[in-house]
Length: 119
Image (cartoon, rainbow, N blue to C red; front, side, top):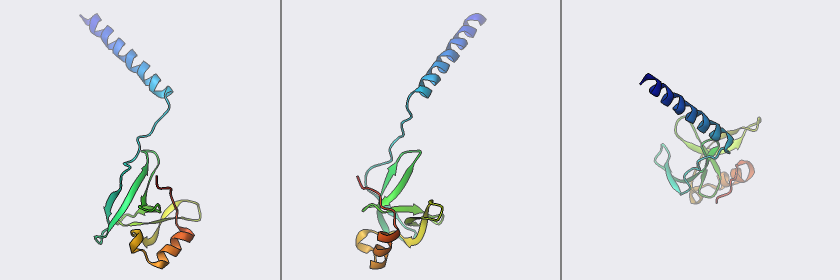
């Protein structure tokens, strides 16, 4: 009886080892982010229309018209910009829907914002 249990355990371990090797050989595919339009609520109650893009390794959020946004520690969604090191960071401007942006915000986005393709 002990020999049978031992043989079954060895066969199970061998099977797991073979499957692990197969997984390592297969190309790694990410799970895509949710593709539909979402409503994100800012701490002040403002309803922002957003999309999420990417997969579990690389992902980002953007406004309905494609401007990348970043979430801050305090829960705000702010427009993304590149710092001097080339890293994506949050700007002080709070993200707004297209129809609610000031002309100054639009001008800043055209000059400094990170535009993503909406697909």
